[in-house]
Length: 121
Image: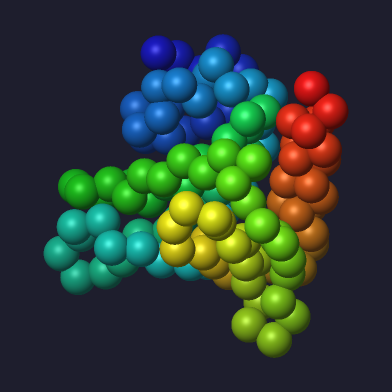
């Protein structure tokens, strides 16, 4: 499956073939690092906010992949002390994304708008 807009890195499209069906989307690069099977280092975690899901991906030999529905999110917030977007999820461990405040608030605004849209639909 190809990204019709051409904005996503190819590895994101490869990990999330359904993402192109979840358009429109916004891609955010976090400073959070996850284990992906790389030899000496962890890889960056990317967050892609689609229409119905928040997609999380870390590229590597054993790629980190997680899809979180907006309906399952509880209390998304930005923690000023740690510099992280923290999203509590009712069916798993919380999502923590270390980001700049501007990116964090943009992502939170997008998440809150998508949550409202899904409740109104």
